[in-house]
Length: 294
Image 1 (cartoon, rainbow, N blue to C red):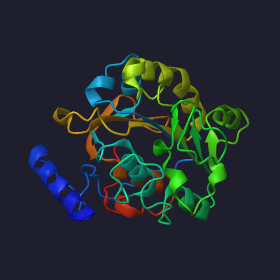
Image 2: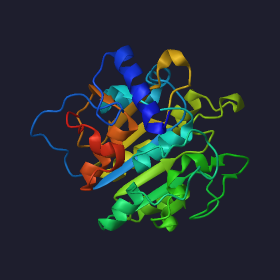
Image 3: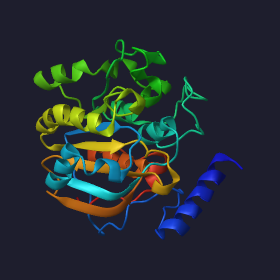
């Protein structure tokens, strides 16, 4: 069975299991949106991606719970697959590109397909990806600092049609905020402890929540007419959770304390990013419903 055939099979299973409506692209679609509503244009979007925790594991943690109470969250948000790498590719490039592993480089790369970096550059918008423990701007190493940095969480490194000098160490984010040069689109990738990936090394969900509490407030303050998107790449891979993850939109434009029941995937979030920045949605994101109720 080819990749798209497998996606259709997964979608059919999800339809039977959840009793929800799926988009024609065979991915989870956002729930119904009101006819005539549009996604508002935003000046800045910062996307923070955490690792391998279920919705129920993180929504009760102090900082995450505070974000849910103060901003807009989604109770039906789902990762697409396992392991990590194809989820990151989907959020950045609108496709998993047939990747089913965390191999480095990503199988089949470099890709020349549309992606957020290329789309921003073509539209005259600015973007940067800020990764903890990235050795230097534009580095293509697979791992660094005893695997605190791993390239599998940095999907932009796998594309040939974007400016790789926009891939920066995380320390550059504070300088860009203080200097008034925050890009239109930013991705923030904590290292494999701060994102709560390496749980056997004490990097627990609680540890990640503390990192968020120490770092996200400055991002929310900086976005102005914009939002911080906090999401997880996938759940803990236990079958009982069906890849149910937490996604929160935080910032001045969203409703305070609102919990949306729209069904989200990484493709749905990608569509929102495109629409909010004035970019034509691409890949599987083009087949998703817009997020308009938050």
